[in-house]
Image (cartoon, rainbow, N blue to C red):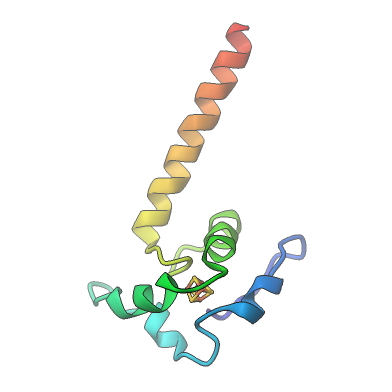
Amino acid sequence: MGIIAKPDLDTSWKDLSNCLGVDPDLFFPERGASTREAKEVCRGCEVRVDCLEYALQNGEKFGIWGGMSERERRRIRRQRALDRQTAARAAEAG
Ligand code: SF4
């Protein structure tokens, strides 16, 4: 994963990751290449949620994190932004 953390983000979960010792290139496939193998490693990873949340909060734009591709993470970020807007509008409306 090549983690370079922002100081306020917890990365202690990485010690329990399924990908320890796995070739990092697997998680950063060339554009258009299969992500299946990386996702298989992630599937049984007990810190998958922490890894995904880290990537979302850290704005990781490349690679497979928490079993999700860049495109899949973008979708989650977009949905969360929409949810925040909706909640803000609801709060304003009282
Ligand atoms: S979810 Fe995948 S990339 Fe994240 S720590 Fe686990 S095995 Fe590694």
